[in-house]
Image 1 (cartoon, rainbow, N blue to C red):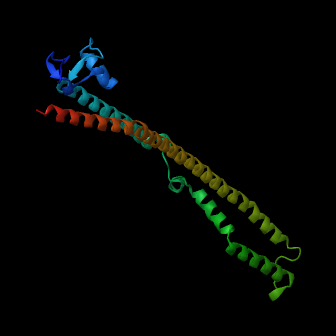
Image 2: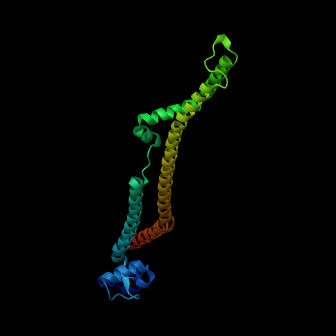
Image 3: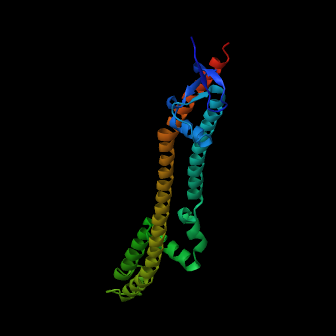
Length: 232
């Protein structure tokens, strides 16, 4: 014969299968019951009707906890993406905006001087100069051997060309430094984003997954309790 037990909430008698003893419940739910009923003991009985609000409260609390943690990680990820410290710049656009007229000339001279066209033109001029003045072609001799004027001309070109090329090299070095700094910021930003995403995945795998399983188990318990209470 089924025996009756007294619910610690309303003091009414219920069939023992229409509720649960505190020692059979989850500690988190028991703590919530004892929050309202400090004198509750593990041997006390609570009917399903009064147990249900505590179970629902527990589920809602777990869901809110997961939402807060995910929201916290999302906000941190958003701040990282918007952080000025990790801002990525367009190196070419920045150099173009800050380039002076002299730097443009230096880059152009270095570009021309480092081309095969300039080398071929240079060789043609040298050979032509030597042939004209050394072999007296067309009876013209404006710089006889040992070609002092040619040496002076070449020295002047070298004296002017070297600083211009160095200016262009300095600008190239500046571009490399900017690119390296830009790469550093990109890597730093990517690393921080990956770290946050890993933390988010770890939370989903280690905490939220366990919470979901526990929530599902509690939902099944609630459904079972509802089915039992609906029996006549």
